[in-house]
Length: 227
Image 1: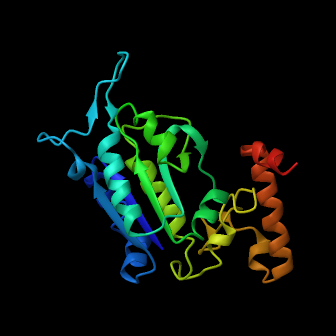
Image 2: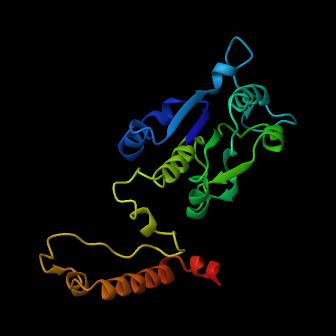
């Protein structure tokens, strides 16, 4: 899989995408991640990629031309399954979307910045818009890193135990059950006996019940989605 990320501030992506699971996935060539500095495609000598909004108002707007140039260059080299724009005023990113994106070969992520991008970019170049939550960040780079991480960990061979991702929260619209490790008794805080029983069927039943109970208490909206 190949992920191309277009950004105004590449350094914001260096650490999130250069360590841990993503780093190992890149080293094993399970994923290619290429970061493109939008300023390299600026059309003026000041390398500016934003301008004042027509009609007035606060903030600056990312210009259409440098974005058009970099996306045009990339799409001229290969076919992309999705061209994603990260912005808070869009569809919420979910585990289901991450699952679908992990099956694709090539995607572009345009990370928003400033007040947003010229609407013509969204109208003519973008195929999917995603938000990671109902709040506003200083820029879309962190959102792009979150989306990338969620996708990459699902790729075959990335996790040492490939069944691990299948038991994550949200995979079946349920939150994950509690997990425990040694020691079984710490200062009188004991691990539930069923987990020490070795009885696989009872353990699985307990975990499912815990998932349902936690979801009903913390995220009942997820259960409504199943209705």
